[in-house]
Length: 207
Image (cartoon, rainbow, N blue to C red):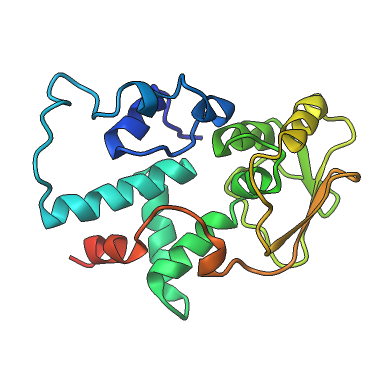
């Protein structure tokens, strides 16, 4: 299972904005953007004017980093979005939102998508009563995502739920008492609160 293993804060600095990749740390003064709001590397302080291609590339990189996927997998999502009916860019974001690691994060069980990915990969959740340990699993309408009774990270998930860092989107329904969430519908574009201009990504891949 390929994943980015280097420093996560460098990714936020490269994009010039908080991507909330490290959970609670991103809400403190220790956040890299708060301390060094310029790109990493020895030439980071000398920003150059981006080209049109550079702007499109940055949007694609930003989307990849927010959802924690690498290039090959992201390209597969894009090609699948092209084959679906509707607007390609919106279809792309909707697919990324339906990933199980993102759903776990959106429900509040995980402080970040990275933590959600770890929890899913370690088999802490079940979908419709069956254990699922694939972070890229795409949920469907009616799916019930629940913490497994034998989970060793239940206390951590309760802590994240009590922190209340964000509202649960309308396409999901959370039952905190039962430690479960239900997929009410597929996400709409207005439900996807990520700072990404998907049209630029479509333009980049259309060249």
